[in-house]
Length: 472
Ligand SMILES: Cc1ncc(COP(=O)(O)O)c(C=O)c1O
Image (cartoon, rainbow, N blue to C red):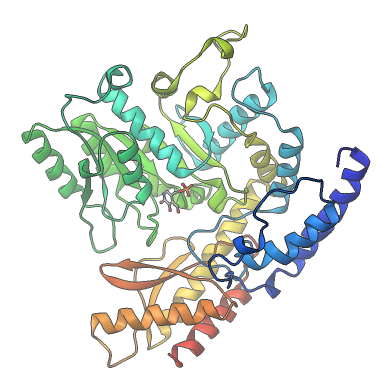
């Protein structure tokens, strides 16, 4: 398909398909019900020698691919954290792929670099982060946290690991709460620090890191001759959106001169609401913070907003300019490939620009507040039902709960019951919820964070949960 005219014809068909998909999305089973290997077995073993026309490719997309899709954009999708999309974001993604620009350096696409600078300033202001933070868009929260831990490592060791490796050094120690996301552990593995040098700090009753235990762990490590380098505080843990006490953690980081990274991958979007700014008290002492507009700011995956207090330290950790990447452009422009791991970079700022402009800040705020209120209603229904209980504070739009019929108090029995309930619910295809374990208790998680979710969807889901709980 080389001619723009044929492309135009095919593209129009696909736009129509997308519009229909969103109109009818609720008719699909939310969670793909296919068996492992069933899609793979339908793909020919070898690539076609001759061209296939678009009509045939599209027929196969509908026949082979669609049955294997879990519908993350369905308003009945309540699992994990959302990867929510929106129409302005989709339109921007069309343009991004049409331009196909590779945005590794200023020169390779000046508009991409300068728009990234501008939208990250917008985001910084929208979220109330201090002016000294500078932002860069990474592909994911995991990558942002890896960048933070690598930078913390280099900062603590005068950039010597970059030059000479880790051999013969003191053990570096990183600290996070026992409920921190697995990406922190992954980052310590990749950074050569080792997962056994990640210290998981105990929690209080609301699943927050306990600063007293953090202080103690650091003291003990110093006595043992280890080198504490970094603390990762969570604003919105994955399990229950617990909010670590940042100001107290920041104080400890200052006392021991440690890098403070904040993982706010999901809940950071709530900072656009002034009533949530209390949770970043002490942020002025943080060295880096990440949150993902691709989770809860209606911007297609992937788009992770990573802010650093000192871009020079970040750049010194990653910068490499081989001959073939040298340009005549003076130093004062940003070459974002030096701000992280990837050399090649997508033009991600465009979709963020489209989304922020199309919704407007107040539109985004309204959407978040509506979703938080919907979660509040769900919480009330659960609390008022004698056979269900809330398992963690509801701060945003995640509700953690379990089925707890009267008379059943055995921990294993309750866990089995809730696991069965989750399976029964997801097998209906009418909704998709996920789970975690909080304090050893199997807990159902429902996030009312999908772009098009309404109270009606959540009411319908709650009715189904009650109905299924009587049949397991
Ligand atoms: C608190 C937290 N941090 C990090 C991540 C990882 O984010 P990403 O999928 O963008 O790597 C998640 C994902 O859910 C998360 O909840």
